[in-house]
Amino acid sequence: MHTLEYVVFGFLGVRMLTPRRRRYRALPHVTLPFLFCILYAALDEVHQYFVPGRQASLRDLACDAVGIAIGMWAYTLLTETAKGERAAAKES
Image (tube, rainbow, N blue to C red; front, side):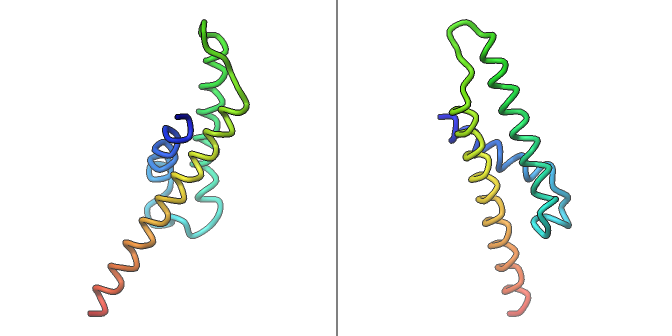
């Protein structure tokens, strides 16, 4: 479940935190959204430590990180595909 939840978070996080004109042109523009999402996931695990019946886990944090990376990759794939389709439409 952690991975699936954080796929959506990674997708939306990169969309929100990356400047529109520079999306995926350089690594630093991907780093900030990833670090923000990982920080949120880590704070969520710390919060779970204090909730009765829940536990903090590094395994959950790792699953969160994988989900974030998949979400960011999916966003990149979709935006690059859309960009290619727009370029092809202009040539026609």
